[in-house]
Image (cartoon, rainbow, N blue to C red; front, top):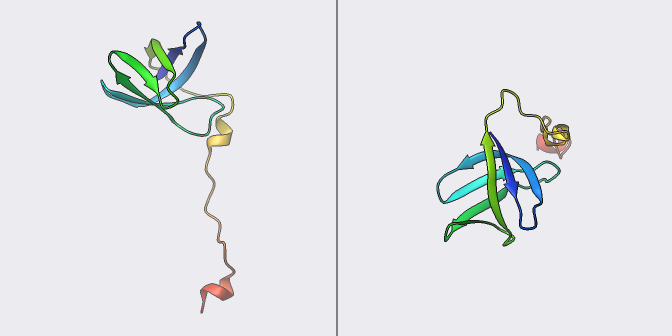
Length: 88
């Protein structure tokens, strides 16, 4: 689901809501490698950094793609040791 977060001062960021409850939500933001977690404290959504946000909108999308989503793809695992070391 898409989520629109509104920061103090009017800044807005769109993200992808990965999981959410009444007390906590986890959001993937385009351009960020880490997931951002928000907790509801005394009626306000607070990020791990301490920033307060308001939820502007939450909506489902048939297909969700961020412009840099290729950076999030994970390839096959690579071996770190040579085959001769693994045989011993």
